[in-house]
Each structure stands twice: as structure tokens, then as C-alpha cells.
Length: 321
Image 1 (tube, helix red, strand yellow):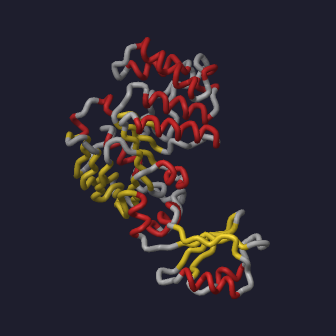
Image 2 (cartoon, helix red, strand yellow):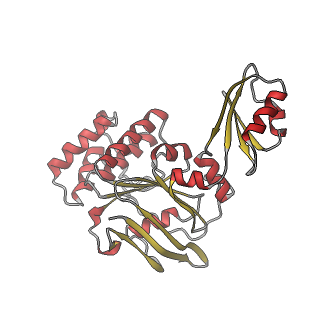
Image 3 (cartoon, helix red, strand yellow):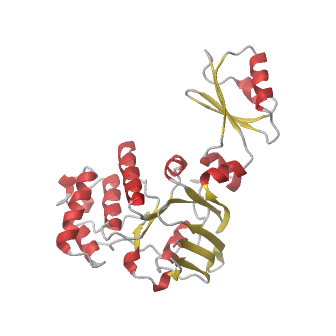
């Protein structure tokens, strides 16, 4: 039982949004769907939900084409705000759940529990427009999960959240995964994806450029990095970038990460650093980060804008108030 995206193609006029896209998501895992702006992530999610039809190919859950599945199979957190702005938070959460067949009393009890967990129980009777963007995002997340969907699709779920609320949402992800839910989310925050995801699909211009278990993708990249810290030297000295075998230096508050050329020998780099008279407090060969892997495969950061002329219409969770 898995989510299978099988050779899906979609055009909006002259724009090819998806170009034979294929990948699988195993049940009960947290899956990162990554790509720069305009890569086709939102279009793929909307095809899953039946909001948009593919021109070719098929998406299946547990072997059944998504068009034949009950709507309550899915939970959807769109990137855009989809709450009724002038309606009370608890009232609309109960309303959204009732659309999926949930009993109002049970939905109310579950919604109050999630509001308490997300540290906003006092907002239950406030209008949505009175909430901050981050708290609106948390309410939309609750709306997406109250009916206990099998698959949760989330488009940029971390938008507008401060570090504390990021932790709260990540903990919710882990709990839902442990309950057997399948979570698929897009994000520009590579650190969050790396911390949460077992597997990812990286797409560019509607095509898959890499997919599978994150640890396997890192190993297959063939890239090696070095984590280095020099005693008494901060920030990282310019001469590190001139050491043979070092392609780029990425300094930070604690030292630097050195991106190596494919044929570089870490031992030779260690000797070269020592030959410069530096005292090394840390020297460790590490795997590339997900962000570094993404840039290597796509050629630009995930939050880089790309011209897009054929986006599908926005369909929010609850409509417009």
C-alpha cells in the first residue's frame, strides 16, 4: 500500500508543469517533496486531490486511482490561507470535520484537544482574522487532520511559524507518522526536511531529478564534505579556500564546512591545513547536507523564484468568508 505517482504529465497552455513525473511514497512515512518555486509540487498535490486532472499518467493510493477514493482519504494543508476570516476558530474546525462525516461532538472534542496542544486554547472562540499568520497556520493544520486522513498533503506547512511552533508542528508530524499516517510535504526549509524525512523526491521543471531514501541519495552523490574548526581562528581564514581539493568553503559561527572536489583526499587536506600552522580542534568527514545536495542537483536554492504563467486556481481548505 503506497502512494504512486506514475508518469504524470500536465500542461497549462504552453507551460509544461509536469513532465512524466514518477515517484513512490511508502505508507506510514514522512516524505519530502522538494523543488524550487514553480517546479510542479502544488500541481501534483492538486492532482492527488482531484482538483486538477492530469493530461497523462496516473496517481494511485494502495493500488486505487485517486479518482476512485473517498475524499476523507486525504488531508490537505494548502500554502494559501483558507479559513473563513470572520468565523470563530472552533466553529469552523467542527464544520470542516463535519464535511468528512465526523460527528460534531467528537470533532469539537478533538479540535479542543489540538488547540490545547498547539498552545492556543484561548483562541477557540476568536475569529480567524484576529489570529497571527502563524496561529492561522496551526488552525489550518488542525482542519486538515481532524477527520483522521490516511494521507496528509501539506504545501509549505512551516510558513509563518516561529522556532517554538516549528518544534510543536514537527512533534505532531512524528505522532501522526507513528499512528500509521502517511505525510507528504513541500518546503523551502531544507533543515526541517532533513530532520523529518526518511525519503524525498526532488523535482525541477516538472521532472524528477532524484528520489528515494535520503541517506541513500547522500551516499550516491559521491560528494564528501569536511567539518573543520581551528583553534583561535574565527572566522574561517581565506586560505582554506585555496587548499588543493577544496571546492568551496561554507563558514559558520563554529568553524566551516569544506565542500570537496570529487577526487579530493581528506588526508591530504588535513596535512595541508597543518602545514599552514593551524591547530585543529575538529576535523570530520561528513555527508553533504540536503540543501547542498539540492543545489548540486537543481543548480539553485529551493526558494529561488522562477517565472510561472500557468498555475491552477487556488482552492482553500474552507473557502472564503
